[in-house]
Length: 493
Image (tube, rainbow, N blue to C red):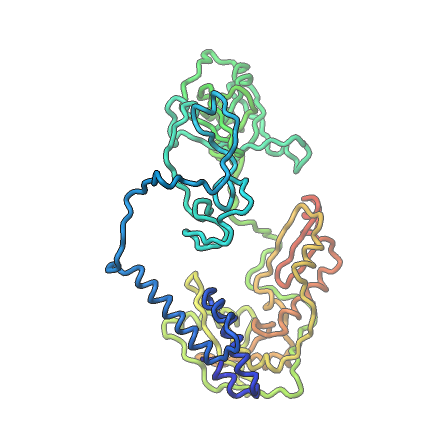
C-alpha cells in the first residue's frame, strides 16, 4: 500500500478512497478479477482490496489443485458413437461436385477459416471470444495459432538439385552484379586487360568472387594445343541465388606486369571473364587498405577550433559548491588515472591549479571495454547554476527533411568534439576538480556541462552554414549529395 501511504499526507479528503479504489481496479493485471470488481456497486477501497485478495487466493488454489498429482483424474482412451443418438454435424459441410479425380481422394489445400480452421461458410465463427490453448490469446483456436512451432514431418531429396554428388564444401560464391548503365562511378576502372596464353582478355575485377571465370567462347579463342577441360565438382552460386554448373576447369598461364602466373579458371557456357579476389591480390591488382592517412595534414592529439573562447554563465542566485577531499579511487586504477591526467595536461585540455577556488567537483572513474579508463567529473552541482543558451538542436524530422533526394552519404565524427572548443579563462576555474594527485581545471569545454551541447551545436552551425548538403548534429557531420563527385567536392572544401 505504498500509494496509500504517499497519499496520506495530501489533502484529498473524501476523494482519497475513490481515487485509491479506481487506481487499484485499473492497475490489476488479472482480467477476471478486474471484471468481477467492476460488477460490484458501492465498492469501497477496503472492500476492493479484500475481494481482490480473496479472488487471487482462489485462483492460486485452483491452479495448485489442477496441477496436484493426488487429484482424481479420469483417462479417456476412446470415444464411441452412440447408435441411438445419431451425430449431428453443427456446421454446414462443403458442397462440391464430385469428379472421378476428387472421388479417389479428399480435396487438399481448400480455404479454411483463419480463426477456427474449419469451413469459412459459417455465419458466426465458433472461435469468437474463445481463448487459444497455446498462446492464451482470444479470438482463435490453437489449431490456427501462428505462435505454435511448425512440425517438419518429412524431408524429401530433390534429385534434380544434386550435381554429380556435389557436397556443401564444393559450393563457391560468385559476387558479380551486372548493371545496364556504363557511366556509373566509372565502371571501366574495375576492368583490367590480362594476357592469357599470349592473348589479351578484358577481365572484370570482382573481389566478391571466390573463383576465376572464363566463358566458353573466350576459352575456344585461345591458342591451346590441348583444349580438353578437366572435370570439376564445383557449383557456383550468384549473389541473388542463381546457380551455375561449370563445363570444366583449366589451368592457364597469365601475364601481368611482365610476370607469369598460373591461374585456374572455371569455364562457363556464357558470361564474362572474371578475376576473383584471391587472383586479384596475387596479381597485385588490388591492395587492402587498413588506414587512410593524409600525411600533409596529419596531426596528433586533440585539435582546437580557432575563434573566441566560450563562457560558462551562471545565474545570479548561484551558490558555490566545493569539495575538499577527493573520492576514493581503487588502488589498481591509480596508475591509469595518473597517466590519463598527464595525457590531458600534455594536450592542453586541463591544467594544474593550486590557488583557492569557490567551485570544486569530485571525479568518477569509469572502466572502458578496452581496459582503459574514462575520467568523468561530477558537475551536477555546477549545472544547477548554469545559464543555458537554448540553441535549438535539430530533431530527426528536420534532418530527414534536409536530405530528401540524396543518394550518397558521408558521415564525419569529430574526435572529442567538446575538447576542441577553448574555454575562457574566467570560466576555467568553475570546472575545477579534485583528484588524489591534486586539483585541475579544464582549459577546453568539458563534457558534462548542460550548456556544452548547445554551445558546440551553435559553433559548428556557424562554421558549416554556407555548405550545401551538410547537416550538423553536434559532433556528427552528415554530408549528402546526389552524386559521388559532389560529396568529394564538399569534403575538399
